[in-house]
Image (cartoon, rainbow, N blue to C red):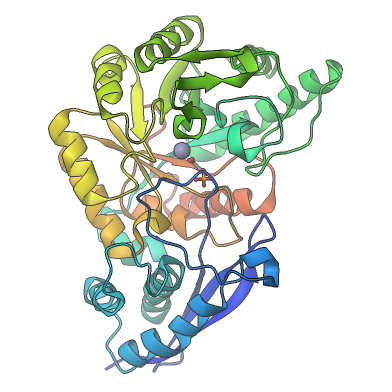
Length: 421
Ligand code: PGA
Ligand code: ZN
């Protein structure tokens, strides 16, 4: 019998230069698996809790307490156990933590171990991670969404919406979709520098120029798609993540770059207008995480036309998603492992979404690392889409490059790229 021989964690740095947890699980057969936990900036209020040390060290962002929780409490509980029942391992950690949000041990401690266990098991069996987690069903690659203009809390510019993404929908395989996105990214860079605008990158590898309005990025992206030789709306469409909880004030949705404040239904009308003018196929967090009445209006008005993704509103939480499904809110869910805290709970949320025809979009965080766990995870669970930032910055490319390798292993098998709306 193979059992867990050792569990330990290190404090490493993420792409923003902040500390995070790398957990390692060593099995009795000598194989091991490690995983690095990502970290968000525009977090939903009901997300699982990241444990940070406070104090002066790393300006309060150290994770030594989470590391200690892995090394002592979690290791004490799991060492000696058989590793292959992921749900059982995750359940033990949940009970050990004893809170609803992992606020005692830290979701960063628990998720690190949860992912590292899965990886150690895959290594022990000599299987790729997507095959271990997904079995023979893991056959399809997700359609990628590339965040090429960054705004909101991911950039030091005046753009209110957080992410302007391109989604290549008219391509036969993942490699061609990636190429088209990269070419568009380079053409966008040229347009921006010809206009004398900044081409420095935001947290997710997109450009972060100061622009006149929230509409200007859409114009520039359409131009970049055309300059790259592709047809907007046919081959490459646009996805927006407004992350609107970040600009919701007591008076309404404050669009600082346009100097106006909108009600929920006015913002929905604005989206509707933008969808008529630009090839937008999906909007994420169009309204705030607590604005369920607004979400209902938005889903009724736009839900038959475009994909409406819930990120901060659902926080990858099965119970909250179930409530949303019951109320007819959104038609897609963003999937972030660290919002809920373990691999098995994330899988449960995905299965609930799939049973109810909600599309699943596997997502990185704005604070990332070289770990590409989520790429395997998206393939394992047959998720329709994946977003991992732009086609620049190593931590973003780690995921896309991993998908290229998976595509080769699957023999350029099925690609979901044409199936969005
Ligand atoms: P975050 O942003 O990782 O900063 O939360 C990503 C997103 O909102 O989708
Ligand atoms: Zn989001």
